[in-house]
Image 1 (cartoon, one colour):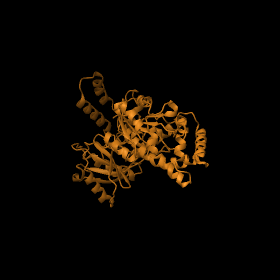
Image 2 (cartoon, rainbow, N blue to C red):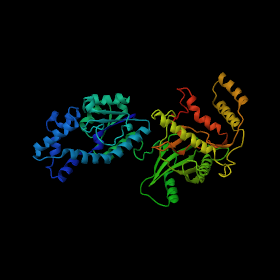
Image 3 (cartoon, rainbow, N blue to C red):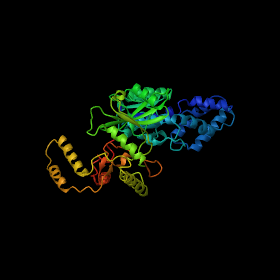
Image 4 (cartoon, rainbow, N blue to C red):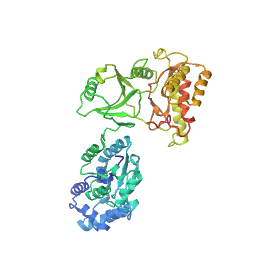
Length: 475
């Protein structure tokens, strides 16, 4: 499947009649008054007229209130009902729906919100983040209602998918039948939780436990969950009835990085890949060492908790660190920020790089973390070897570059800790201010010339527009 379409009221207000009945009982209103008023008039009922955009919110409430008065012969505060009760009921469902949409999009699928009811998300105070959806189709704006097939075709067109590549969640059998006739897979929403479980069976991945920048763990990932859970219980000193939730961060070549939710703990596990020996020992061991040292030196890095070199636990060495929540900018040009904020973010980036390069190697006990001197020469030689290993045919320009570089290497002026892959999408920023909370991606860290980190962080600004490899888009 390539897309999932959520009918808004089905997910956000799964039992409107029950909600209305409960409110009527609490306010001594005759049972069924609101439902009867909403539907009275057939095609000219207040709810359908509002859905079609023929009534403003104020006019809708006035007509609904008048209908209720004629039915029950009492003044019914319908505005109180809609704003207090329905809104509160929706707020219970919003996090569930939002998390499901985030999990779906994390797998590369698209999502759409189809609003066929009188619940106008753009005019309400519901905190429904439309950024969770690739398309939002509202009936009152389009002038068509379910089960009109045109509204489903419009959804599919805006998503750019075929009917058989999409799934619709709705609580109306009539709507589902119309969608199914187009070839759309359907899920009946009698209860949102049950519907999401059925949706999970269609998609093949969980729709809970979302953590930003992660995706579902694939079936090929061989992490023994029972052994990991037992290890965490021993480490943290408590048991939890909740299942261990495991997700994978979307990058990492020589190691795999996972998000773990264990009870109240949200942790990150970084695990060595099988069969990937490093000349300087396991990469995760080096990373753990440098994280501990840099944290003590005041560099903002994730808090490393424990290193496990016992391969009987998960098959290869790994370490655990605390999860650092924040923003990761995938585009170094920061197109969504105004110039002043961009300058502040770039300044914070430069400041944290300076802090890394200012670490006292002796005080941090990192004097033996890498070779001293000739770092630039070593880098160029490594690039040459990597290029030769994957070379398919002779490229004259590359041959000239390979010959030219060793003859024009600058002399290393200083030896410091170098990150080795310092760029925007390896930084976690505070969500509200230009502050780096943590520097990630230390697998290439060593001792070397700090100017190389500076050059690496600036490289994206000198690349051609079509060259995206270092712009953060490879995730």
